[in-house]
Amino acid sequence: MRSQILNLLKQNGNKFLSGEYLADTLKVSRTAIWKHIKALRDNGYNIESVPRSGYRLIDSPDLLSSEEIKSSLTTKILGSEILYFETVDSTNTQAKKVALQGVKDGTIIISEEQGGGRGRLSRSFFSPKYKGIWFSVILKPKFLPQEAPKCTLMAATAITKAIEDVTGVKVGIKWPNDVLYEGKKLVGILTEMNAEMDCINYIIIGMGINVNIDKEEMPEEIQNIATSLSQITGKKISRLKLLNKILYYLEHLYIICQEEGFAPILDEWRKYSITLNQHIRVIGTNEVLEGIAVDIDDDGALLVNIDGQIKRVLAGDVSI
Ligand code: BTN
Image 1 (spheres, rainbow, N blue to C red):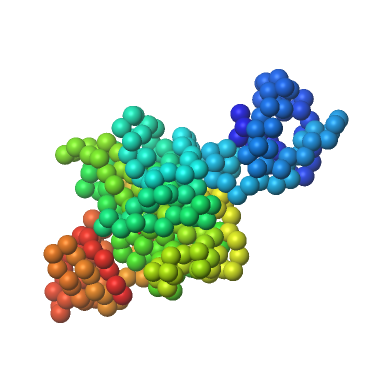
Image 2: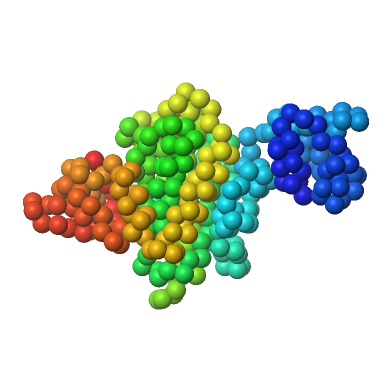
């Protein structure tokens, strides 16, 4: 109900909407409308009310609550269910808990901050309050478990496209899943899966985007290796606009990979890759390799030319 009221107020822009109109449109009493308006105000919405004119929205807080997300959502699958937290240990950990209880494909777990944000290789992930987009999407695709790692490439592509659309900033993807700007990390993605031999129970794609974090707010050890969109542009970026664009592109690619396979997504990924055609060093699980990254194959594995021999790398940390 609250997101519907917000929706109507947002659509109406600067004009007033009467309590009667809201009540009739949403088929509830005027008292109910008044109660919801009060609750929205308590949550930081500045809603003006004028006798005989009604209500109008002056300002919204920069929150990523389900109401806010739903009031401007353009997707059908992603975000059909949203679980919102002010604070949480890790959205991926929460996602795992709820995924076992039979959630819908496309459910989102989002938090304003994470106390125990997790990265790849058991690293921690800095996720300060209201400063970034820290969220996980639960997917229940029909494809086989071996296809799942490509979801990381899909998410990196969606985020890169969304960042470019919303901020005009051109960012690049370092294989497999980091989004970088001038060599500094802007986005991290952690994909986790629960599967049987031939079917996926669920995939969790956890995404962390540094949006409005000043350099001095970052821990010293990452100040020179990480960045944020506000540091790059010198402006505060709307987290909500960016999140909705990410969901839009992610859903689009998710539909494509289920209908046509991953080939079109890998092609898109190649366009944004900063790894291909570079001399790279990969720290893999058992070895360290150096060579030219020539392509990714159909499985999303990196193909590295080492003295004329092509080596397939399935996982690892790349430095360029
Ligand atoms: C990495 O760079 O190693 C991956 C970082 C992934 C961070 C995101 S933030 C939302 C989700 N919840 C987590 O605990 N991790 C992911």
